[in-house]
Length: 346
Ligand SMILES: Nc1ncnc2c1ncn2[C@@H]1O[C@H](COP(=O)(O)OP(=O)(O)O)[C@@H](O)[C@H]1O
Ligand SMILES: [Mg+2]
Image (cartoon, rainbow, N blue to C red; front, side, top):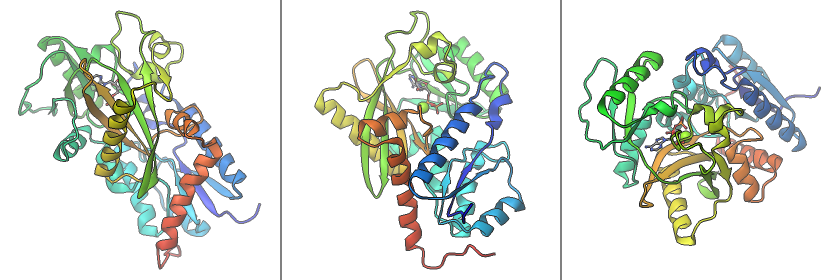
């Protein structure tokens, strides 16, 4: 085996797996597929990647990176030390070591993990988000100005963790129960938002500086059983055997009137820039019953496993899987080339 020239950094298991006993199926296997596919693509592109799992920070992590001195890191880390809010620190460490890496920097990664802060930021640049408020454990919310029905989500999670059919509440007593569930199970704030009763779009974006929308994808809820809310809940994302999974079919590219699609693309690009994302990302949006669009969240470094929505959009834009991986790698390499003094050696 010749000298390694890049590193694929990843979590070996999803450590949040055990968090909620009712959500036991968090997909470690999906992470494995993602790592394997990225590794293979890098090899196809002529790189010699070292695949490195980091579940906990240790001196070894730093030493191994310093020893290899990679040209870049393909950063697939979504959490470390069992905490997804420390995801940003992995990017920060690579910045400190002067190692270029793929995907967004620490500021965008950290910010995106707080959906309430993202709403505040987006609103400040006139990007619409659903009306809502944050209810922190042990506090009274400052305002409760929302109309029912509402949806209750953990403020700092991803992958629809904590989102289930009962997350949609039609009256104050159900709302109270659902907020208590988030506080007790996830030990974090509950974001209460007006429920948007329209269509759902995911917009995949690629680029650094010169940024483009790859494609707009729509979730087709027509196969969802009548008694289940039309949301992409936890089981819809991860439990292939569930009626929720079968009832949330992605259509990519979405069939949309040109002007409406233009508006969706514009909102997504502005959201991506507002958070300072780079390389790749996905913006999730919903419309209300009248078709007005609202951003739900911005995902820097979204899943790029072979089955992921981002990859479907890249394909729709004409990229093979390997071309997408190599394009993202080139962006990290281009940034690396701009760093005058690379400080690998410790
Ligand atoms: N305000 C809302 N109105 C209607 N559905 C929502 C709303 N917020 C979230 N959802 C549903 O919940 C899903 C997950 O919410 P999202 O904010 O994207 O969190 P995650 O980071 O877990 O993907 C969305 O894909 C959507 O189906
Ligand atoms: Mg989402």
